[in-house]
Length: 374
Length: 222
Image 1: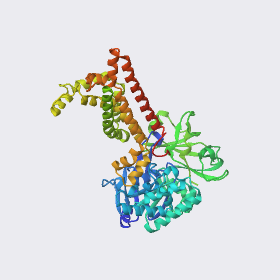
Image 2: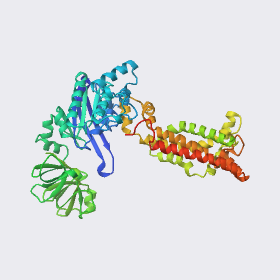
Image 3: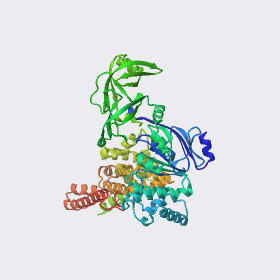
Image 4: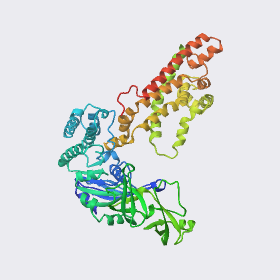
């Protein structure tokens, strides 16, 4: 239904994308999202590895979804059901990469005019001139990227993508490494430019600060799924995030108390519930003593019948199996480690390890499988 | 001196032709996603480990009047291929192939993928991306490929001996000439030739290393 509405309103981008990335064990990943963006900035927010870049690559035609449909500016760019896959050069999407990817052997001016090869010399010069001015970099036209400073490189990368009059602008953390003032100045110029064009802009970031500064609409992604959509306040602070996390497939929602922050390692230690059980989770906006919610997928927990050692995973907890319940081809184990964990295991594993209720087991949990929701 | 001139001519022809046929092969090797790619990679690298006489032997058999290549050549041009300058070029192309292809593959692979993505998103098809991004950024690799295949062809001996025989002015290259002079105890003349080859080889390697160290390049490194 959304896609039909999108085709009526030419300035809307709709994307329904499913893409599986196979890798060894834990590195396999499924992106399964459906998003909509109208003219102006829409923020894609989420931790690294949430699938933000894969989403942008799919919209730009640099990655091919296994399944889905992408419509921008009233044109179908990708539709797996109808076998449509417009190649990247014909999509008229603009994409500013995290690394900017300015051509190092071309001057700023040549970089900017790269996408205008098919235009008449006269027209091309006019457009390059106008956009260099709009982004305040006309003085740097003869310089090569290596001779240009950070913030100005970002401006040139923006100018290069926008000069082609795209239908959609994709920004992958384009302003990382800039101070807040410079960032704000660039965003102002971008907004000014888009006031006339009104194209949808997907702006990827994992910085909470940037979300607050840019305001507008946020789509929060985690682990390949959309976990919430709305204004920054609603998305990032609302208590219903717990429900959203559960809806997004976290079987374990544990309340915990922050013990200490180890900023250098990007982690913090928390105590689960009222138990003695301590685990390490990714660093979040919290201070020692704060209560937080930790969400863990049942499928992300490993179960061992002996104390494992020599593991990279930071969290090993011992406990006892309370119950085993077969559901289809999956066995749901409830394990008491002071707090109750729900763990998914296969029937084969239950047989091989001779698991029964009352059995002593160890649970292994990677730090980054623990998701902070508060 | 006639032999040296002949060698130079041969090496220049081979280097030029190899650049032309090496580029598409290298492009494919650098960017294709095909499971059986290692087969072609091995094939390309084969002349590196194959004894030149083995390569020369098969080249000779193929080019002989009863070989497939020889027959084709006679049908097309009315004369045989073995013991001619053209035959020499053909055999040398095989012999020096990895020296042209491998530096090209390495430098194509070294180009940041995101630059290719950027080019595609800006509307450039793969040929424009190749000409405007990959090729200019691979210039050191192109120079290396040209210089190495030139130098390697200049010094070849076994293959030339097998395929070319030893015909003055047609297939007697400088390394064979040196061998001949030593056989007939003309050490002075052999030494003169050998020194020239030594000087050429050294300067050629200097070019390769300097280009790859970016001692001089058309644009500053990142």
